[in-house]
Amino acid sequence: MRETAYAKLNLALHVRRRREDGYHEIETLFAFVDAGDELAVQVAPRDELRVTGEFASALDPFGNLVAKALGKLPRPEGWRITLDKRLPVAAGLGGGSADAGAVFRLMRERFGLPDDWRERAAKLGADVPACVESRACIGRATGAELEPGPDDLAGTPVLLVNPRVPLVTGAVFARWDRGDRGPLPTGSAHEIALAGRNDLEAPALELCPVIGDVLDALRATGAWLVRMSGSGATCFGLYETPAERDEAARKLRGLHPAWWQMSGALR
Image (cartoon, rainbow, N blue to C red):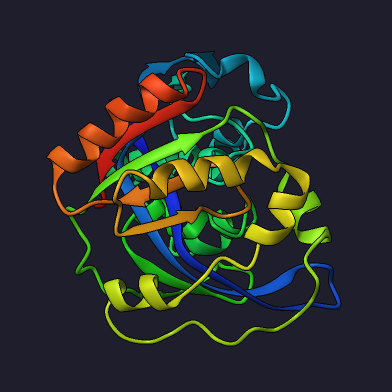
């Protein structure tokens, strides 16, 4: 069995308040790219996990969400999983959550999921339920309360760029100024994305100023929307055509060869 762990984007991310339990109330428009990490599964006597790929060394072997997801999903067989880690870690792309979501989809395909799969997924991380479906949706509360989202941006060409600087989510939230700047807009995904914002961009810039360089570089390519995803440091540009996206990728590779990038389309 094979499955892609689709990269998660926040087309808009509004932070409303800090809760008494330490988490934050957010409103976000999730979207997913048709590319990401890759998982390959073989039936085995017991569960095993092997990690390969460019960013394999950045993963904590004791906190890997693939292994934790396997523990949440009892099966009548063991799974030997090879995870090709193509997404940068601590990058605002939900990489670990996307990996866990892929495990849930593999389980759904082979055996079906238990009725309480959403609760099991949420215990792994607030955005894991969204990553299981990996379709445009609106997340509220900590991000785990999902509503169907408008999908009028499906197929939109997208370019992801990361300066190869990890950024821990908790540190970014800790710098948020607690100012409520208003709710997520309503309307189509296009309208929400254009009228929305990412409230974590300012604190992320304080911790990682090079994000500003990435945003400026993407804006110079003619993308119709440029924004940081999640808590950063990955930024993205949305384009009218694949040719415009590919030309932007070529240009940025020439100007900033050390930056990581991934091209794709919204699912």
